[in-house]
Amino acid sequence: MASIRLLVMDVDGTLTDGRIYIGPQGEAMKAFHVQDGYGIAQLLPRAGIVPAIITGRCSAIVEQRARELHIEELHQGVSDKLGRLQEIARRQGISAGEIAYIGDDLNDLACMRFCGMSACPADAVPEVRGAADYVCKREGGRGAVREYIDHLIALAEAPEEDAL
Image (cartoon, rainbow, N blue to C red; front, top):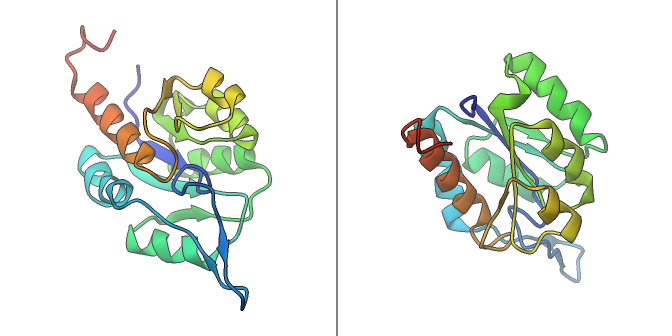
């Protein structure tokens, strides 16, 4: 198995619980889990894994969170997630086998099938749970991304015979 060099994450339903709170003046709010943030900002760099976000929605909230976590590969408003993922891989010189992906819904399936490893939160739609290499015990927005990061790091650190 190739070592993972890029972790691509969906946002709504993966980094968040999928709920979008809209106030009376139209302001939107989303909740992010602090453990996911620590894993992205602290653990991934130590493991030599670049974090990336590809999401179908556009949100200033996601832009702010990506800045806080030092995520430079932020792609919002993307309808063709696989095309964008392939573009990132080409630009960074990373093969499909070196990419891990975590998402929760049907628009994530093509990317999950393209990548070397894939995961989903526990509350992902059934088709995604069936396609994932790893189904997290935690739900989206409740530490699923951190759980997957810990899993990826454990696999990378496992002796070769244990990784089989």
